[in-house]
Length: 232
Length: 75
Image (tube, rainbow over all chains, first blue to last red; front, side, top):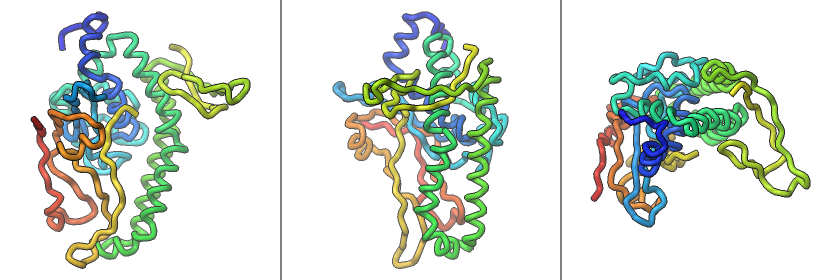
């Protein structure tokens, strides 16, 4: 952990063994969902040993993410468990109690490399526009609720709860998600000294000419509209 | 995203004929399951989970799900 990742040779050595983009997605997924039971618990990482395999480098697997969106106990000691937590809060989780295995220290060290740092911040914004957009998260919630709803009266009766209580819990979760996705832009600005967001639209002429790569994502369905930041 | 997850599906569970409610069936990331997913042979999965957790009911009712998962080393 002492070698500078601003040195290209050092960075390339690490990059050959360790998939930093997987770490970035792992951190962003937990930051977006305000996870409070990770790093000190529930962190999985693996690599394949097949010389012809596609996962030779160390990468991450999500594990036990129920302590999210304001639910459960703050085992990790995150500084803010509310929907208004800054997106960069995980970058400060470097104590032995919060992150005994040093995943965040690895992230912060890799960010010494300018290309990696730009990837990290761009990836946050890309995923806020897509996976963690309000539309996508609420759509995912609604699809799960629709699947569970027909059975929840019987389930609640089995475990001494009520259907009405479940509906109330779903509403609490929905409110947290909406507060989270609608306020992330403020945190992105303050964390990384950016301004915006500004709406952009990607299109092509003719419209079926092909996709457009924007940062870490390729948008094949055009026109595509998103929100991006200035000041970098 | 460049992350692995355990696939899951919702299930209505009966145990010895008794209604048990709604659960997730999840892939168990062992040496027999994961290679089928990603075609790689894994040597290590590290996971610092204390135990499996089921919420919404007494843990005492769920002994089958209290599984410790330290680092799994597969040769």
